[in-house]
Amino acid sequence: MSGSTFGTFFKISTWGESHGKALGVVIDGCPAGLPLIEDDIQEYLNRRKPGQTKISTPRREDDLVEILSGTFEGLTTGTPISLIVRNTSQKSRDYSEIASYYRPGHADYTFDQKYGFRDYRGGGRSSGRETIGRVAAGAVAAKILKELGIELLAYTKSIGPVEINESAFDKGAIRQTSTCMPDYNADQKAVEYLASCMAEKDSAGGIIECRIQGVPAGIGEPVFEKLDANLAKAIMSIGAVKAFEIGDGCRVSAAHGSSNNDSFVSEKGTISKKTNHAGGILGGISDGGEIIFRAYVKPTPSIFQEQETVNKDGENIRICIKGRHDPVIVPRAVVVVESMAALTLADAMMANMCSRISYLKGFYTHRN
Image (cartoon, rainbow, N blue to C red):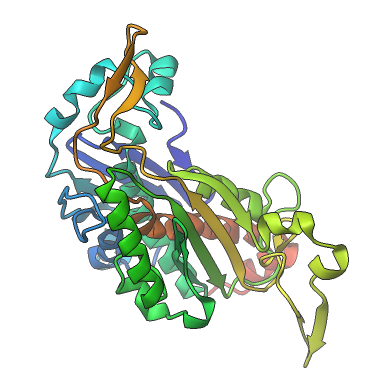
């Protein structure tokens, strides 16, 4: 299977299946000298692990990470970093029945068509647990970016019809609410909405928003490696994400140029914009403003209602899916979105080091 590697300079390769012995990632291109211990990565993994709230799957996994290589005495060595998280709560028998049919909304049918074979235990590589490797690597990328003064903040903007109130935005609430909403009132309403979905054996989708501050102007390429295009690819590679937008997104199609253009202003020798309809990126290159984008997440496809489908013999059947599933994917996907953004940006920052001869001369002629 190809397509499990992401990045050019800061490159990752994820591996493992939902019900295999373990999952993990190999990071190639992390510079030497970065302080890194398992707790740095565990903090991120704790944000996505299951079984923590009533609106999360009851599957309980500690998701404890081990650093197998690439560090010495708490610092990265510049060699490949290998990270592993062992599976401890598989119940493959819950999935034995689905070996004979295709679940609606899942990749069962497409996997069979591509490979002629699939790991039906929890979806194999299509499972949400595949994101463990992404998040573990994203924690390392985010730490690199923090060294450069760049901060990422992702959160739940909406679940179903419930959307946060920007005037009630509370950054601290993101880690406190079960929905990862920065609005306690919206969180309560969303939990009530999800309770009604669960009572009807149904699920919900939502929107994740991500804000990135501290990115200097000039990051990204003007043609095929645009920063917004690469962010879109990274975010759309997350299994449950069905749409991506940056800045005003789809609303620009109904705007006028006079209202959509961000006017530049110079104050005390610093150039900035009066507005940020573009979302911090112009022509595929960062403009120095806050980068803001949104990921639209579909409802969890595994629901407990009876559904129509087809078995491997081509017969029409009706099914009721068993197992342990999230009624909403959004809260646990927040850190995945943040991680994929960090991976994309770390790679772009490294690529930018060779965009000017002055950058190379500045480094190689002033080395100690």
